[in-house]
Length: 495
Image (cartoon, rainbow, N blue to C red; front, side):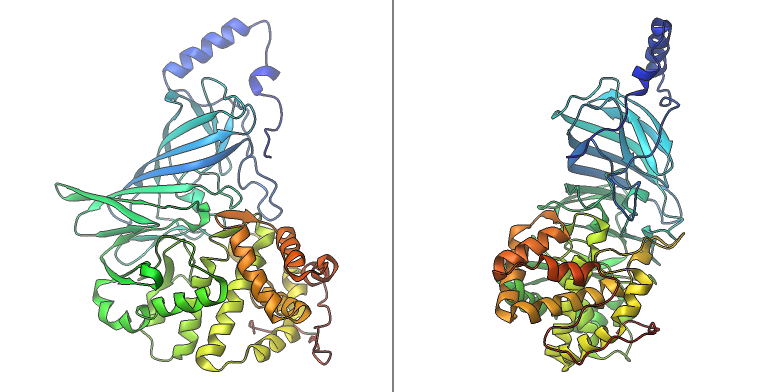
């Protein structure tokens, strides 16, 4: 369980001047003073992002309201957080940067606050008891003008979010770590000529004068890095997926017909994935095609983000583009429904998504999985030298937070799954995939959890086998392929 660290500042600083200090504190509270001078960032102990997340509480729900007036100015925002204290708290931290905090209340009472690096340190007027429920309301701005570290991404006609891995707190105050998932509600006010879409299902639209307020609510817990809000001149195209699943695609108005040949493939792809791993885990799905150059695609929950440029080119083979679509779709099971407990468990996300991407490329384009995995094996030692073993990745490069997304967690992670299938057999591997999704649906899970489920399903003790494949600096021999060899030099690109 998370816990609070250190004694409260008020306890450490007690003296004979207690009455004077208390009087000053009450006076300061009444005028909305800043927090005490002793503040510091905290974290939940993530090896790759030490200051990310916060101990002492678990978030149950976020209700976030944005007021949009253009992508070149800060949005006014109100973030309401419902949480449960896991220990007594006379102070709590939220992750937040890239905005101005105007006020904070805890359980309806004004609270003191101050910034500490990328944390917002909040001191309630009344300490919070262990196991107690509490509500924090932060009135703040959310600034989209500096997106080099993620968060808001400015498009040609509005905004979208790209919060992976640690950028949600650049948009709204939160406990920004995938180990603390919560339900989300978004309420976005924007000029009524624009379209607003967010994670989950629509919960109403109200027009007032020149503006409209859109509401969306998710039915399942979500990691902060998977939050998505799209604001722009878009059209929402509705269709039906397997078992009546609502599918909605958000595309630029001018490109609706041009991208239809791609977006119309989503129901078929969902059915293909369900045949591999079981029922789709959420209330709806769709593609968000944004008119922006991001350099990546992103599996935001129920609404995967794609660059427009991918779908208006004529030089990309259809099987390849469809396999990219399936990569992000597969994340809805692996990474979204079952989230990593720490960022060192990232291979569970990307290895699985790459695995099903490769299987779909084999299904649609005849690109044999064995050929791709052999190429990955040849590069695997070099990838490990460059980025660390799959489950023990090196920290991000200075100033490049997303550099943890290296080849070793993509094709390198898929290679671990290939080795595991070679070890336990295809039938046991297929049962493992379904059991994994079922056992940890709507939760966060560790590499150790995966090892335990794999051992249980296969009837084999796989701890030593997976320990070598996941943590060794050198790639172990591939079961059934004694002739596969790892190259000595690093490749220029992933397999």
